[in-house]
Length: 552
View (spheres, rainbow, N blue to C red):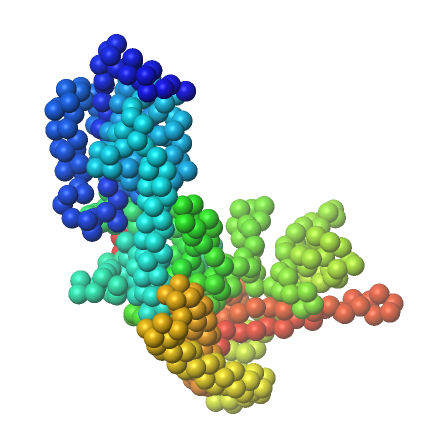
């Protein structure tokens, strides 16, 4: 490590070659014009000129927090130091160099001396050539504490907005635009909303993200990145656009489509707090969807909530394409009646190969965990086709009776559940009211000095978290109860829609996914090892919409 004498000797040999370093983060915008990059640079250049020092480079990181030591120009400056191109670094104050006290301390006490560099923080009176720098470590700690306090306040602000159901993203979700009169509110974008509806239409027909991606490319519908660039929101290009500027804009990424299909924003809800954040580390992972803060009814939906729920089920249970490259006809529909896992398609090894479906648990772990639940593809197709025709014929003969029977069966099965939901909802709403009173009392206690501000913040955060969870739970319960009220109407709509399938001759994935929610396969085995297979066909009571046509 080089001493102050070594630094001075090096400087006298060739003079000081100064590097000016400036940094400005979004938090610093509140400090006014004096904190700007331009003002930092002018101040430091003037100072160096008065001292007679040569300024060999100016490094500046605009929009970077001091906690992030991976700043582009800071790294460039460190490389220049290692190449011995610089022997003096000067900043406006210590916080410009960094707010992470461990890493900033490493620069000042190890990296700079080891490379023969003198460091000056002008406004803080810190100069490593002198022996008056004892205050520097304490200033580093104070700078980090300041950043931690700012981070806490910013997070609290976002948390409050999340609980109110306000949109806080930089860019509106594809299919929406920000309200010009309220940036935290979303409006439907008439240009891109039809594409979102088209994507959900494909998904409701049983198609996965890869199939949807190919269909969008065939129809030459530009991806979200292109739309944002055309509107001046973002100036970036996808890797496909970089490789093929003419046609790359029509190529959608698999993950973009999957994330779109999973985003509850399209049901009129705002989902926030999706990631886990830690001070100084940043985002450390994604939260589970059940841990998000979701506020319903914040804007106009693009997709019906029930259709959205169906899509989530299909995404979760969807099977990989078979050997032919096409997904199985019953992909995402078949469930084992005992273990609840999917039934997967495979081919027998006999001389005459035959497609069969069997339990996923059985295939993976054997008969000690579940039985085979084997059903031949042709047999299943025949049974389902016959049942659809039978329901269509019955609906044509006496639609009212069929609808009443459907409604009655569902109501009988769900009566107990509905009563339990109503009791739970009343209890949750009572607790929400109690929590609101607790927040008011907490504030009064803090003002009166009975509790400290820190304790107030901790208790408030805990109370608000419980409030948000209960409100989300209550909203879901109200939605389910509302669905029960609409049950009779949905049953009659379903009866009307199925009538057209009386003469259906062949099954396809679109028809299956439009009519059927799931097919449950049960298996019983007698003492003589005779297998008995039965199936339950659960229809979608609400008919699914046709795919909307989009020109493009």
